[in-house]
Length: 129
View: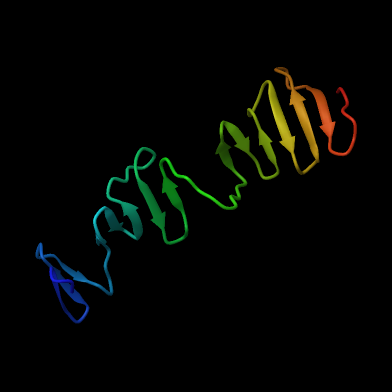
């Protein structure tokens, strides 16, 4: 109760006459521009892939124009157009590409035919393939 709502047990009656069971809420406005919808907390303007943000109980965060700090860990996806693998980052999935390979401690330059044309092994001199 905040002056615009009343509470009886776990039921809350808001100023717009909504009745919410605070022990079993499934959706509604939290405050201002936040919503609780089907198990997600999200911005009121959330549209998947184009606006706002959504956070699920399992920790999945979908956001547009996000700024994150700290450590980011990923084993799949893309960043800056580079493809993230479990131990590699590649400039392309096929054709001419550069592969940074932590698993094999090397950097490979691949031509459009798929052949390695230059390899740099960490701690070793570069070699032409």
